[in-house]
Length: 180
Image (tube, rainbow, N blue to C red; front, top):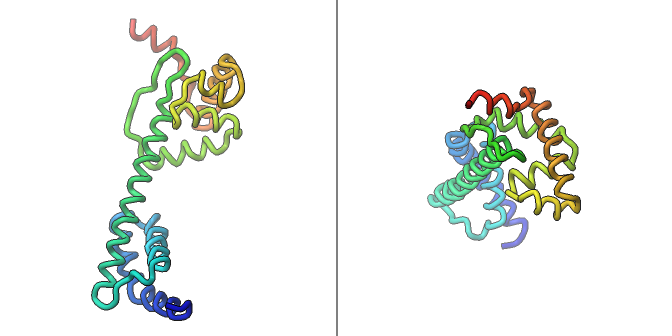
């Protein structure tokens, strides 16, 4: 199929089926992500224009692609939630963990914003620990610094993140005393 024929077919496809695909995405993802998901569906349709069936099967093919796009986005959300949960529940140097809990999307966005306000070095240190699960020895090797420097920088980075989140300092001594 030549380029102009492909463009005409795509334009017709888009004009005829965008609303259906968009509504499908809205019902599954909500308004915030539906337009991007619908755009992804039509990007696939453009790349595979020769595979898109004609007639009555066109809409079903597009909804099938939308099903996969929505699934990918939902999996990405779950991964992001798990990553942010790990970041908030990261183990400190004493082996203490913050209490695990399910984190709502608004909280994830708040942590993401706070993290983005940190220096690149602080962000990387926290990500290596929370997201990549690296030990302090491994982080020291990645960053080319001593293990002691990792401990110090990690403590400072977590404090800066807590400050940006507006959370009170985590006082482990008070927690230990409360347990006794």
